[in-house]
Image 1 (spheres, rainbow, N blue to C red):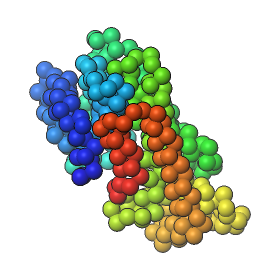
Image 2 (image 1 turned 90 degrees about the vertical axis):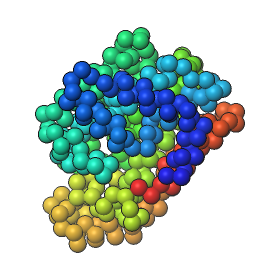
Image 3 (image 1 turned 180 degrees about the vertical axis):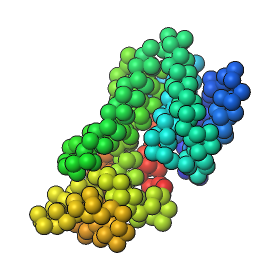
Image 4 (image 1 turned 90 degrees about the horizontal axis):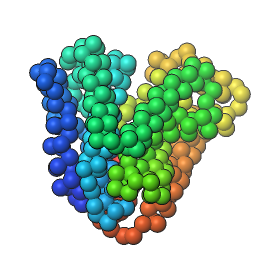
Length: 325
């Protein structure tokens, strides 16, 4: 958490103001809804998304932010929170960030309605203030996130994901939201500038590296993080596994695919698949690709003059690669 504190330092004031504004944007006349949104606000995560918005906005505009920046950060957070609430219902998940999820405490019907409420709040916040350019950035991200999830489900059934399809899935599923945060940060203060596209690409590259790092946790790189083998149990084709299958003999490939399709609940078999991926160089390959995305992101940052905001964004890129959960 020390690194997150360092990253946040140049925008500490903006984050403080944002939290107050965000709470106001979530408010409702319905007591039950206020109780639930209060629960959500008090259990927030690291708040990486608004941090990206403010750091990018301040970097591209010599330290300036405006009301659009706060609204943009709030819309991103409202809509992202809505997708998380809906995800927990879809996944039948009882926990979110170590706390009970909304659906665990208030059941699915209320959770779906709360997600819908947050989504509409986000849309109206943009529409009421004529922030149509910001709304378009966020709407494209939500569409792509949905497409990415569905593409992953479609391909998981066939277990025929190529490396190119994998990149498309993670670009849509994970990277598109970070890309939206960064392009929105630029668009809020410098609409229609080249910075908007540069920062979208920057965010996308960080998002790709972030997801590959997440995939590597599945192979027990650290004692904390996701439980080992969970992606295999869920029949998710991740980069280390795709690489290992591409290097495998036909016999080994058939054995791995059969293990994932028909024996993914067998702990010993899952551990054998993990060993196979490690021994095939899958982790090393995925790590090298992750660093490639990191380097490309840093090259985009290099175009900008030195500032505290740029330094924090560099720290953010390093944090994505070096985090332990």
